[in-house]
Amino acid sequence: MGTLHRLVARARRRGVAAPSLIALVVAIGSSPRAHAEDPCIAAYERAQELRLDGRLRAARGELSICSRSSCPALTTSDCALWLSQVDAELPSVIVESRDSNGPVAAVVTIDGETVDPATPAVLDPGSHVAVCRAAGRSATVRFDLARGEKRRSVSCPLGAASRAPAPSSGSRSAVPFIVGGVGLALVGIGAAIALKGVSDRADLKGRCYPHCSTDDVDGVRQTLLAGDIVAGAGLVGLTVGVVLFFTDSAGTAAARPRAAALWRF
Image (cartoon, rainbow, N blue to C red; front, side, top):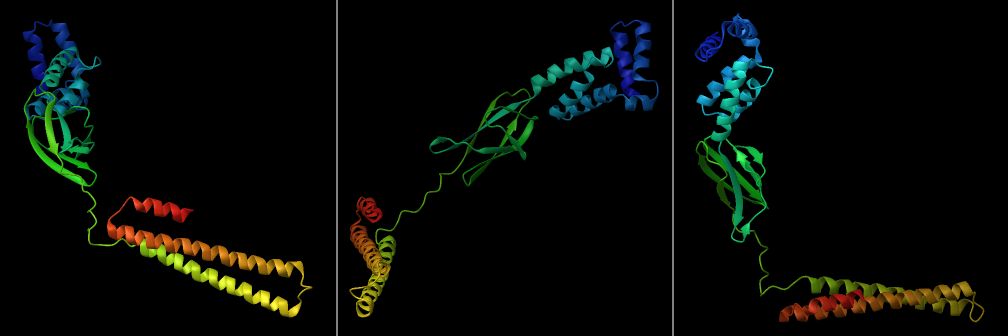
């Protein structure tokens, strides 16, 4: 009932007529239970307590309730006035993530709550902690906000972006050995196929030459051709591997794309 008494006293100071006072009492409720269940009066009372505690964001939520037109006129006028005052008192901040190259797009949290870095974050007055994260980097910054401090700019410095270590000048790349090894393997496979073709041709000469069937002759020719193609590709790969080996040892990076193009050919 303390809130009810305060409202009635405020109405009397403003010169509200007796019928209006009676209407106010009826609207609020004359019993403690009615008062507790009335959202307007409950919000009216909580808003004042929250504002005194410095919890302005929560107070603003309560004031938005008791300032509704459906609430008693006296609570509405008070809450509307206090709401404008709280809006003026609420501070805001913009956290900008930066590194040595300038601004960085980062995920920003303030007091554990994710915020939009491009929009001022409205906070309660007092101490806060911002955490910025970007591409495996993170930074934590602490700052204080005073009542009414608007669009405070806070810089969140991130370390330099990690870079892949430069290859040692004394080490060799494994690419020449891989390419050369594949080429050498293909040469061996091609030679094996060709030997089979030679063996099949000798077998045909002993069995049916010169009256061998066209299918048998074509099969031998295709085997010999396949051996030549595979062995030729292997020779190309082996050549590319040798070229890469010597250009890598000389540190000529420009020759690598040309050798790779030769391998694709």
